[in-house]
Amino acid sequence: MTVLSELGTIVDWEKGLVSPAIHFDDEVYREEQKLVFGRSWLVVGHEDMIRKPGDYVSNYMGEVPVVVLRDNKNQIRVLINKCSHRGNQVCLFDRGNTQSFTCSYHGWTFGLEGELLGVPMEQPFYRGELNKENWGLAELPSVANFNGLIFASFDPDAPAIEKWLGEDVSWWLENFVLASPTGGLEALPGWHRYRSPGNWKLVSENFIGDDYHVFAATHVSWLHVIREFLDQGILIPIVTYPGSPTRQVFEGSAGGGEGGPLGLGMIVLDDSIYQRDLEEAEQLGPESVEWIKERHDRLQKVLTERDSKPYSFMNGLLFPNFGLMGFFSAMLGRHFLQFHPRGTMEHEVWQWTMVEREAPQAIKELAVQRVYQGQHMAGLIAPDDVENFERMVESTRSSQVWDRPFHYGLQLGHEHEGPNSLPGNIGPNPSEFNQRQFYKFWLKQMQASRTPAGKE
Image (tube, rainbow, N blue to C red):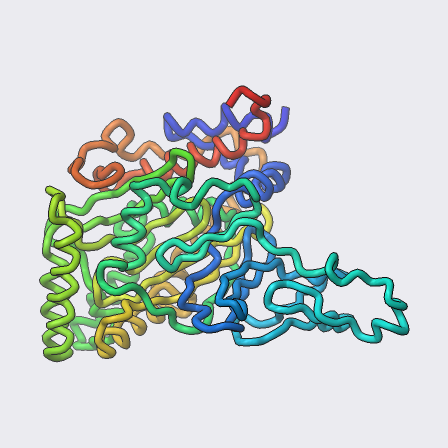
């Protein structure tokens, strides 16, 4: 028997018991590339990153490098970053503006629609026999724009993005991730990238629902630093980071039907963070105060018919690997993170930052500083997680310890004990319900190819 053939037994999401074998088995990893990353809608960027024709950013879809660009017809395209001649990458930079991409190996040049424009010494070497129309860059067959967020899929028969997300996920993304009611988001240039130990699933499930680690153990050093700096009067942005609300927070869960689940941690349903934002805005000036009040009013209009009126959330993840952080307060920059697989025991984090487009400049500057001082490898938060992943790999990589499953039983049987007037499920926080939902959908995708035709 193999790990792959035993997935239905060793991934017991209903009981919250998942074997560590799924993080270290090479066959499972190879199947993931086809069945999870090959069939899901994957986030590849935001339209604000490519504002004008010729703008591009590079990214990955699973292990496949891609270029996300806006062509001269203002159409957004996603091209595979692989020369059709010998496989070299044709785009060597994270972002830029260009009218073509030229391979550094043999000089083949491609246009913004992926077409092969030119080949060095084509006439004497190829003698007019090269059909350039057949040798352009491969283009992703399915690309969608959801309120500015760009998705792509390798699956030419992928369901419409609205169907994949579903009403519940769409509601949370539109109103609380992409800030549509408050004017949308503005992308800051560049990526923050780093490699980290740990299978991509370990970091994804951390973001989708693991608020247990934040105050229990992992980040207590950060909290101690904050207290010590406050006592000394050192008020740098990361020290004055918006704290916990005065009352209860909740966990949000949405999706998981046709498309992947969305999990949100530390949802705030009271006005404690709003009041705290107002107090900080007063220190920045009248324009900031006016914006915080206007922003709050716009959110309230969206929530008019809801008994529960969320203000914000802290962390989250959209399956399979699109992480969210910093949505707790209007005074925080929005972290958008992607956890790209790099073998069974390593992943690469690609992170970009966005701010609310209509916010005053003073708020934008404060929000960005908190990003750089926090959820960055040079910050005070992310290194704690990386150290944990490194130790988890070291203690769990051997198949001799795979017989004992990881435990995801927190709030098992109590996950629905929360307000019921919002899309999806609102339950207690911390919880491991979202991790159970993550592995439920992961298992569904991993078993799809082994379902006989007509039996789905």
